[in-house]
Amino acid sequence: MGDLERPDLGGPDADRLLSALFDRHASALHAYLARRLDPATADDLVAETFLAAWATRDRYRPDRAPARAWLFGIATNLLRRHARSEVRGLRAYAREGGQAVDVAAPESLAVSRADASTHIRAMAGGIANLRQEERDVLLLVAWAGLQPAEVAEALGITAATCRTRLHRARRALRGYAELLEEKDA
Image (cartoon, rainbow, N blue to C red; front, side):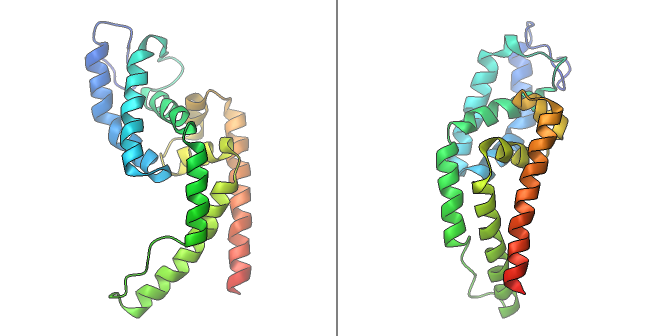
């Protein structure tokens, strides 16, 4: 059936290869998208990702990127259409503070959840304040588990640009973490 890491999608087995790619990568794409959006929108974007992959299969170049990075690139480009609602959601999450504490849990668990909720709010606010390009790189590395070289291929940027964006995002988030430590002290 062909190599699923770098398949030949221009050949006669393209439909079967795309089906196999769906089986292999759909859940990872969904997990990545669901962390950035809601699960229902992630369902839609996974479907759109594979529709776009099928429609552009003749433009996929296996010598440039593995299929996984190509699919995450498509998904990220589709996600950018939802960027404004994503930022609004992160900012709301930063204001509201995550999930409610389970009142039936032991007190120590409730205290740790409340403390974690404060940290999550600050980090969500920090992520929301990143430039879109930095947020995409950071979340593809952190949530999708792609290597920076794969992210660069997925987003159509140089590896140096990817590393720079990742560095800037991490540096900005370190600033939020330091503010948290100061508040806790």
